[in-house]
Image (cartoon, rainbow, N blue to C red; front, side):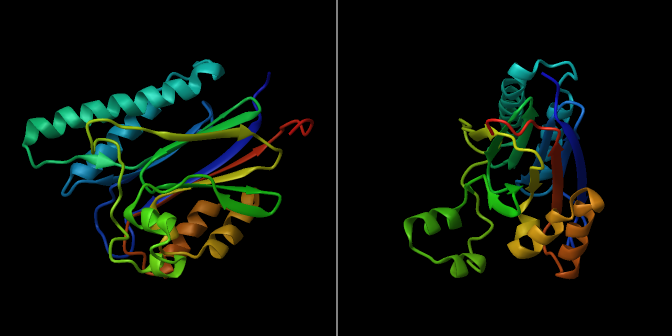
Length: 247
């Protein structure tokens, strides 16, 4: 079965208030793999962690079989997790080198998304956008339990605390979701610097621009206008050429 036609864009920026960018992205339309990683762990640790994830995913072979591609992505992330644990341990008992990750795989008529942390994936379909990931964060746990409202979550003092990340704990569990593709699907992968700077309605409007603009650059520009305090990364993917039957 032939691959769908895919167009993608990717942009990253340190943000309005930081000089070091600990975000990284993967943009591999030739392989059908995209990812965003947001480093954590103090000076240089986060930058190394996200960079190792980028390198591992960029190193996936271009000839990887479609049926095994998700497994290859999962294995690359888990291998990086173990490497980060060993590297941090070699540098001292208090050292942590960790990163969020959200990865999208497009193959034949299916997509799959894997993630750990609070970097997000959104899907725009039939004019409506919804989040297909579920944050691993303290704020998300409070929301899920009903302890805080969505409005309170936006300004919560623990908004930057994640509960899962590559390299953070002894064992890493990647959440995943998969579904059939539909013609015209548009995906957005982003670090928290984007959705904390822009409202979802503004992200939706920019993602709708699709192939008629460079949506990720427009998103970064809009976030900088809002004085984004964190690193900002966006990867957008548009999928066409998908058979409509049985979608």
